[in-house]
Picture 1 (spheres, rainbow, N blue to C red):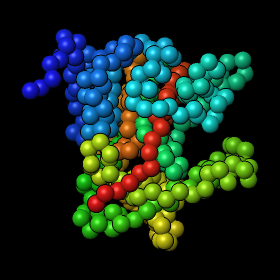
Picture 2 (picture 1 turned 180 degrees about the horizontal axis):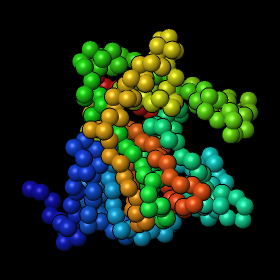
Picture 3 (picture 1 turned 135 degrees about the horizontal axis):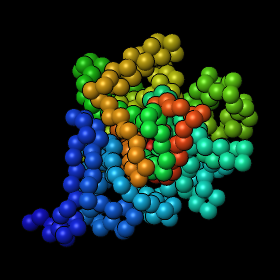
Picture 4 (picture 1 turned 30 degrees about the horizontal axis):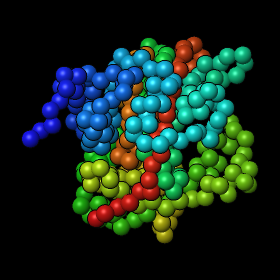
Length: 294
Ligand SMILES: [Fe+2]
């Protein structure tokens, strides 16, 4: 017999935003405690649709942290100067300058990636909340790595299912940030050695296979030539991020997005950083080591 729903729970609905990725949740006020039944539905929706959008939320940092903890323990970002002083679980993403300094990290990655994929245990996902945003630009694009893997030819799926990707933070830092950021110290480099992850990972909640590479952090396939790997990674990511597999979120203040790093990649779209303001709060949920169960 289905579990009886309370009145509040029966008003919760989910609507697909695109065929493959994204779900609009309605009837949930995440500033209040969420019942176990609604939480289970949210988790299932996140697992199946990779991105859940909730509109018109009003969240204090404490409330944002509380709802985030319902999904798992939280990371404290390494760039602690961009975390809220009283709430180190909240990472500020913003182009705003106050008293001569940026109040948050700015210029988020404009290329598709899965957050912290260069760690042995990459983060599971994030809850990203919009306080201010420009009328134009600054959207976040998400691509379904379930749809990407499902759509590949069988021969390629078989090849990938047998491969590890090498995720290399230092390699990406040195090729991307050599002009605008200080070089990494030897200590920082030692802390982030290259990490191997299966190129296809099984989602622990629904068992679906998802492609798990990115052209930001994946340097090679283990044991393969680097330039051939790079060409293949580019080809695979172009396929994975074709418009049919993508949801682009146009932000409004009060929007909260929960995304799943295990089955989606994301990127920031540009906006007029000189003349408009964008202020976002992000929490990051810790994750587990990726695995593939063929
Ligand atoms: Fe990111």
